[in-house]
Length: 112
Length: 117
Image (cartoon, rainbow over all chains, first blue to last red; front, side, top):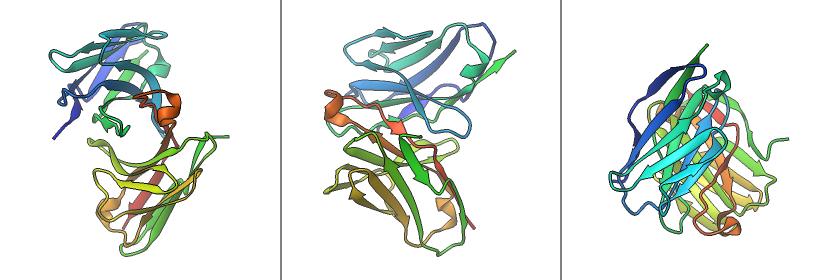
């Protein structure tokens, strides 16, 4: 079955460093990907998205890279701050049903 | 006020009891979803609804039922709760085609933590 999974369950970084969170997907028909951030005790919140006809998209301090050849995407966070500590999920979907398949999540721990 | 509101936020119940989790939204979205979150398994889709007359099963619908009472309300029921239904449940909405083709952004509630003893 299709899946969207993460390489590393936990990532620990120093405050001010850049963070890279990776995600692999199996469904080559997936045409849209989203990164969500989930803080403790809260629901996931949208960070950034990317369509399959793009290989890079930038937001404020965040960049998503998509490599369709190896079915891999990553989330880069520049100058990581304590407020970035959370679980990050990638999600992908294809088709008109708007159903997202979520990865298992990566816990980002920012050390002061 | 939250755009997507779930009640209750926490519930402890016993095996065999009927439980209803409620979700209401003020975003005006047609599409609503119920997800379940378990440690190490991410979010899994239980049911989704694209409008009041539309209900669809997700990945893990067994043991659950839903009701779309109005555009703004979507409730999830466990007819006879069992311990492996202990999880964090999230309601979500999306604008779907209102926001353009292939828009997948979901807006989540704060979650309902259910414990079945």
